[in-house]
Length: 183
Image (cartoon, rainbow, N blue to C red):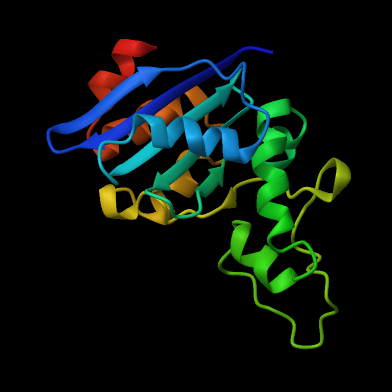
């Protein structure tokens, strides 16, 4: 499977972007360490990962804080080695708590919650191994850079190609040209 990965380090002059290899990445800690190595001071660092137009992910690391993660399609990502690192982390945080899972999954905002519902939310479609189909994670992770949660969810919507979405995300946060230069 072909992957594209880039590290985007926030600097006083904008964004410093470089393509990176994921060969030595086996855990979320490895990804976070990769991001922290690129950081200047404690500025934000993003890692964009895309797998052959199947899914994309954005990982954000701020200093020593826990990484924040957004995945465009949890079920698709869970079927790949690097994507499963991210989806496993997201689901471990709330697998037994469906209220937390609902927060992580992009649900239809017009759907009304049933007060008499069981612990499982039947409106959440899942793929193999019970991983939610569709966006998963912290859709607010790019809000302070100019891309609101709704915009990020829209870019990961059905029919969107991950490579195109990453380009649009980069444009929205002000590093489209430098990301395109490393693609």
